[in-house]
Image (tube, rainbow, N blue to C red; front, side, top):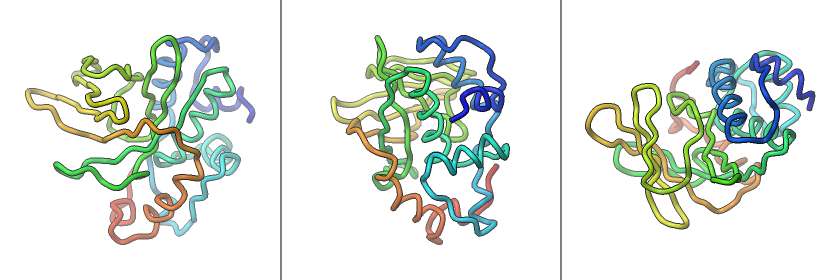
Length: 200
């Protein structure tokens, strides 16, 4: 990975020390610079979970991607900068029920306090959230919180009065290849919302 090219792609010129503040600034920069999009699916271009291929697409060719690509690549950047990163599987809520395992990829960044980072969900939090259950984070007019047990956390968002469940996170560490089957499903199944409409 060419770290300087990555930082230029997200227009980031701040500190590279592996601190909470650096993580927050990188997270915001990434979200503002790299679009959440599924255009390759509708162009008939297969998406393979290979970090060099994802790097080439997003950094060298100025594209965006969906969660497996965006969070996979961002996690790689963080590791290169000295952060300790764990890949986690999440089940996205459709109404009141969570979807299948590996439906979404999020990042756990282990520091003096553990933080959840996610630059691949689209409409979501701008800065990482504390993993600690029940702590409310107010960002950009929305409140976020993680609730749950030692093995799972549920991300909820409140815009006005009611809490809305977004996804359920399993705290079991995963590898990028563990998401390959769902990545294939998301880009080929007629049941996947990624095949039903173009997003950017």
